[in-house]
Image (cartoon, rainbow, N blue to C red; front, side):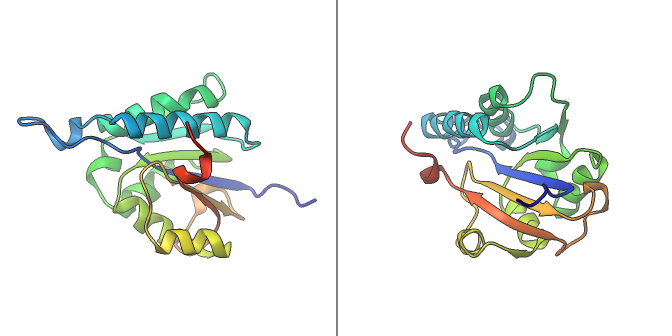
Length: 176
């Protein structure tokens, strides 16, 4: 049995959302029914998984915070959370910045948006499981969860230094 890696990133694209209503900003778009169902199933899956998530950073966009609200029951009570406008508005470097800033965490959940989530995950994964890499190459779906492992603390991550272990998609979670 191998030892757990020094650090893991759990990279979560927000669940499926509705289109913006007239006069509604993109930032305010909520989850739709499909998104809520997928996020609840992901939370149930995470509650059963043997993964340590000891910090969270999420975009401030409504669809990201609603996704976090629905998976939060799977997290240990009191898990520190940080909401970041940069995960909504800025690019890949903002994701690196959040991961490094919370670099003491052994397991960090990042909740964000495409196309940046996909670009970030691709930039990290110097290697990985064949199925996970194939899924990522096809696109990072809503409510998809990538698990990237590192041999260093998150504070020291660099492009290409991670190993993509899994990319869970809603279809992997069974029916709600």
